Image 1 (tube, rainbow, N blue to C red):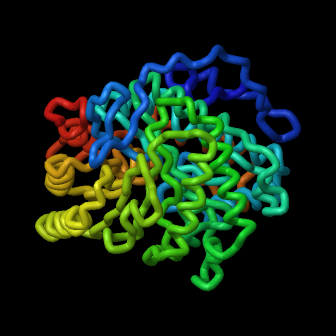
Image 2 (cartoon, rainbow, N blue to C red):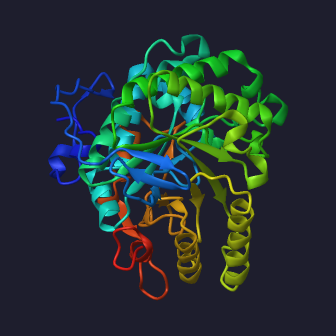
Length: 432
């Protein structure tokens, strides 16, 4: 019996986790047709500096990222032997073939995130998950070369995540973490580019056109789905994590207009790398119904630096706020590491200033406060993509399930990170 998808895994028996192997790969069956989803979450829009529902009720989006699900990062996921998602995929294709590689990624996602993980998120009292994905998740043919890109899209992965999240009362932000050819050259875009000069996304018409076409297709597919809170156009668009400038925002404006051309009125999220000074006012381009998102990492991972961490966060928020952009603000990525006071201070500060937020991230490999849940903490070895057999790799993917080899991150006090987030989440015991 083959392994099921995200929304079917959590409460299945162990037998349902086993699958048959034919010719060295798992058999992926076409999912049965399902009736149209009956939506339970109201559509959202930006109104001034607030996010409101169709009825005009204010909602503040606070939650976590689903990092590692759509795009791998070796430090936080279960792989070694290649630097990025594209490299892993190419090695798998060379070793096992094109379709078996798709099967491995299908099974990886089905282990990394199950229905139990949605339940865990709901139990934290949050109301949103930011879902990082790359073009390769929906246009896998592009892995073999951009000449094969844009011929068709498979949105099954995004559909299943969005629909299951909604069943748990959770919105999804669709975050394009990796555009065609990489918008920043970092591993978290799915493609490492060593030389800054080789990050040519913003001047390469093929890459820009493919990304515009993808956003147009996403908008056409999801425009009537209120469970999507918004579209995050490009994650950390600065080249090699540098600062953003006019070419970056010209590209994002192009994608924004492609979305609106499809009649899609979802909130569009524009990211700055990294400060308020690095993003223009919405009026410069005429952007409407949008949110501005910022990422901030203080590197204060050692005890005794709590004041430095707090001062850094306060300075970043204040610098952004004084520019009076007139749109909702979001801290789209951040962590307070493994220090409980820093988490308390950071979440309390964000809430007191009315910011939307999604922490990085829900789940990581190893015992660290970057993840609400940790896996690989009982001694399992990461997958070596170069040496292990298909069967060995696929067996290891079973160990990536939170229920199999996961545990909540616990502070020295005995409190879990999940319990701290719950205090400040919209539906939490002390949330606002």
